[in-house]
Image (cartoon, rainbow, N blue to C red; front, side, top):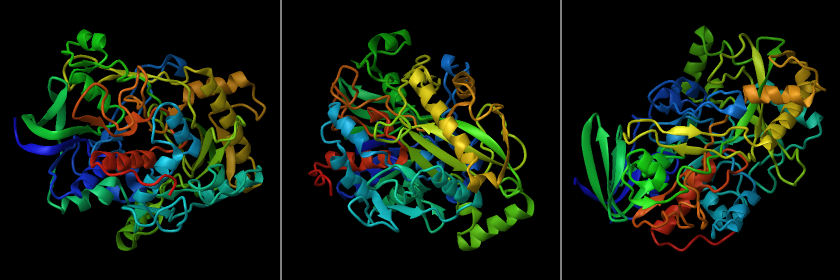
Length: 535
C-alpha cells in the first residue's frame, strides 16, 4: 500500500471540501483528498452567469436514470459536479436551508442531534452573510452569502406579480418563515462564485497538511475485516493506493457514494453477489431511499426582446464579459434564477412548492427549448413522496450504476406539480407580468384545464432540479446506512458525509444543508462538543 494518512476523504465536493478544511485545522493531522474531476478554476465556474457552459464537459457527471414508467418513459437527467467544489462549482448558487420542520422530522425519525435547534448553529458557523446578522444568520463563516447582485426586469416583474396574486413578500427565506415571494441570497463573493472549493478547500491547502489528488477515479475502499484501512484509485490509468490510520470519509455524493460502497463489498449481499462483488458487509439500505426535487416548466413568449436570449452572443457577450472581467459586475453575476415563491398549496402549514422565475427559455436534457425570447416559470415539488434506488450494473468500477428514480411513481407528487402548474399560470397572467408576456407555449389549454390534461403535461415535461439525496440514509432502522455520528453501521473507520445521508429531502435547495452536515460531522470526527443548540 502507498503513503499513509490520518484521513482519506473521497470527493472534494460540497461536503468533502468542508471536511478537509476543518480536519486540517489540527496541524497534527494529515489528510488525503481524492477528487475524480479536473481543476475547477475555470471561467465558466468562476463567473456566476456562465455556469451553463460547464454542462457537457468533463467537469460534470452526466448521470441519468433508467426509463421512468410514471414519467412518460423518459430518462431523468441528474448532472452533478465533477471537480473540486462538486456541484457547488456548477449550481445556481442558491442559498436555501429548507424549513425548520425538515430537521425536526430527521430527529423524530431516529437521528438524535439533528433537530433544527441542533443544526442551526452549524448553518450559522458556515455562513458569512453580507446583510443579515441575527439568531438565524452568521457573518464570520467561510461561505460568503450575498443578495443576488443582478436583478433582471422579468424576475422583478415575477416578484410583484406573485404579490398581486396574494403572496406576501419575504426578505429572508432562511429566517422565521420560508413562505412568500422574494429574491434569493446566493453563494458569491466579490462577483464570483463562492464554491466550497474556493471557500474551504483552496484556503486550507495553504496549511500544508492536505494532499489533493485530482483526476483520481476511486475503485474501492480497502478493508481488514470490517475496518476501512485505505483506498485504491486510478489516475490516468495508473493504479494507486493509500492507507488511512483513522478513517475513510466518503463524500462522493448521492449517486457515487453508494456505488463506491457497493463495489467495495458493502451493501445488499444478494445484489452484490449477483454482480460478482465479494461481500464484506451486508447492509441492505445502501442505494435505497433515493429522492429528488422535480420541476415542471411553463413557457411564455416575451413581447419585447428583453430576455437573456441573445445577451450571450456577439457584441452583447463581449460587453457582458468585459464588464465582469473588469468590474465583477453586470449580467454575468446573475444566477439566472434570481427569485422564487415558496407556497403552502396543500395547507399543512409549511411550503410544499417552490416556484422559480427564469428570464429565458429553460432547456431540459431531452428537448431544445423554444426559440426566441421567452420567460419560464418552474413549479418544483419540494416535498416529494416518490422513492427510488441505485444499483450496480456489474463488478467493474468503471461501469456506471443504474438509477431507478421512480419519478412521479407516487400520485401525490403529480397532484402537487399540477397545483404548482396552475399557480404558475395564474402568476404569469397577473398585471405585473402580463405586460411583458405574450403567448403561452407548449401547454395548449385554458386556465381551467382539466386535471387529466395538466397531469399528462406534468408526466411528459417534468425534470429534476438536481437535488438527489438519501441513498446512504442516516437513522437507526433496518434500512439505515449510517448512524447519527455518520459512521457506517457495522463498520469501523468508515463514514459517509454528503447529501446521501439525508433521511428525507429538505424543502429547498440542498447545497447549504450539505455544507451544514459536513460542518457538524467535522466536529464529531474531531471529538469536539456540539455547538450549543439553537444559537
